Length: 112
Length: 114
Image (spheres, each protein chain N blue to C red):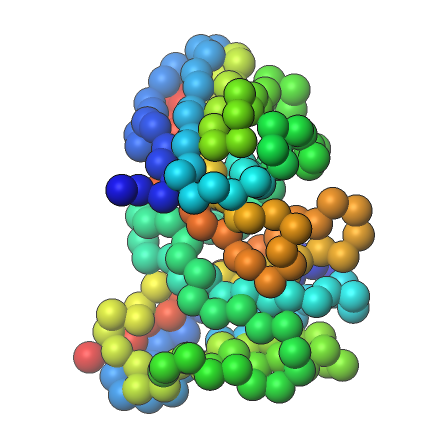
């Protein structure tokens, strides 16, 4: 089982809709969770992090964390074509020297 | 002024050659990383240095050797390149010791081995 799992997509949503991206993780002790956006041919860019159960909002982005169910999600409201990218979920390991484990990413396509 | 810069951006080379990738960060971060991203976008950690000390060394062929001359620089040398080494290599940094701080990535080096 992969440590961080995401549906590879593509997830297609119409412009203006809410895009919902999901991520599950296997390390129950994980404390910190990150969402990165990666445009094609570019480097990943941090857009959100969350470490407490519940919701965290930043502009059009909302991260949701449920540690009991071991999932974290990212909602993008009022999706724009410029949001089309791959979204990578990452968690920080809890054992040994900490490092960040990434999922394989979900490709989002926002249709104009 | 680029926060994490990598050179070169593209590298095309023949099998068996030796090549190096350089990374520099001007953020004052203590920890630097090398990640490999394959064609399916999976980012896998290779190495990490904290203030010039190697702290993470994943299961990577010993043809790959990192070097950190100071905490602002982390280089990656690859010997005897193989076709399977073709990927995008990202350097990243973060302050270290701060659990809720993500990475700042460099722009990546696309390595193609022919």
